Length: 343
Ligand SMILES: NC(=O)C1=CN([C@@H]2O[C@H](COP(=O)(O)OP(=O)(O)OC[C@H]3O[C@@H](n4cnc5c(N)ncnc54)[C@H](OP(=O)(O)O)[C@@H]3O)[C@@H](O)[C@H]2O)C=CC1
Ligand SMILES: CC(=O)N[C@@H](CCC(=O)OP(=O)(O)O)C(=O)O
Image 1 (tube, rainbow, N blue to C red):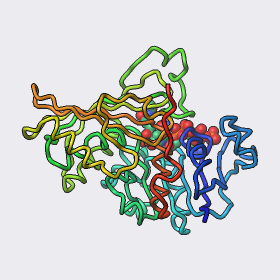
Image 2 (cartoon, rainbow, N blue to C red):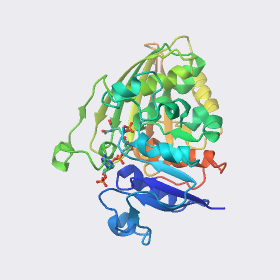
Image 3 (cartoon, rainbow, N blue to C red):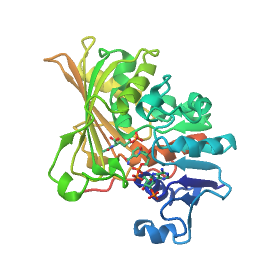
Image 4 (cartoon, protein in one colour):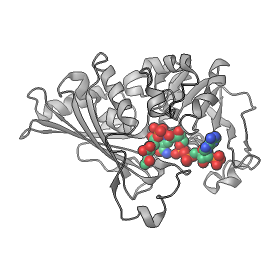
């Protein structure tokens, strides 16, 4: 059987990447793709990188019958588009941030610009789409909230340590992103001459991914959220997230014990693995992989974990397809086993 897939907003980077990855999927086929500005054009004409989709039209809305929908609309627009599909029995994966934060008022504060959530009942049932933590719940879900790119890297870096209680609940996440994390639609300040050979922090300790990281790490501690200081940076590369995460050790553990704890936690996870050396973003470029590298800083009683992923892969579209596979009862890794683009 081949499942029929629709992408809402194929004109953004995340939607385009979902289309790219779906091309070789053994059990799912892209049959509909929407895009406000390019409706009426063929996907393969509009984006030469997707030229293999020579016949697929970009439409304003999804009219085809579909089994699964990905939404990669801007945050706060996405929930409105997702809701009718969920209610019609279509499996929905929201790549935007609309269904991630569960605390009362969190959507309004961080995403909705003060506006109430357009589908609060669906917000309550949406499952956070990180299979390393929620595999069974994702498989049973009608609606999955795909993680943000920074949270995917940070949560995967820290989950084994938080779950095992080896660190204090006082965490610093220092993360860097490639420019594609800001999307195609990002306005001024992202031109080549401005971002090339430049590094800057932004939204210091005030980014909507901070509550997302705290929420999901808190779920591993019975709902008791750790303190998370999150500082994102923009670096001059196209794709990739590098997160360096720091927390005080709560007890004496050796490097060998922590390495074994992490290997055990990710045993059987098809896309997250423990790297023996500090990983590079390029090791994950174009893939759905995340590499984590925990180090015990015994001199200072700290755990330091470096993690890398592709913001459009495990940080967005690859993760969305992995979630789709689980929701449809397919092999979790179907269509996603790719070596990285290197160098
Ligand atoms: N980029 C990344 O690394 C990641 C992105 N995400 C999330 O995925 C979603 C898409 O991000 P990304 O692909 O980067 O975004 P892009 O900026 O690349 O694309 C967004 C597109 O959305 C369309 N658009 C803008 N406003 C509206 C609107 N009001 N209604 C309908 N369409 C609109 C525009 O297309 P048009 O001109 O055709 O209207 C625009 O090109 C966002 O919610 C983002 O937060 C999640 C994880 C990682
Ligand atoms: C470099 C850059 O600008 N990155 C984006 C993260 C993109 C992402 O993951 O977006 P959502 O969580 O909103 O879906 C940012 O900091 O907002």
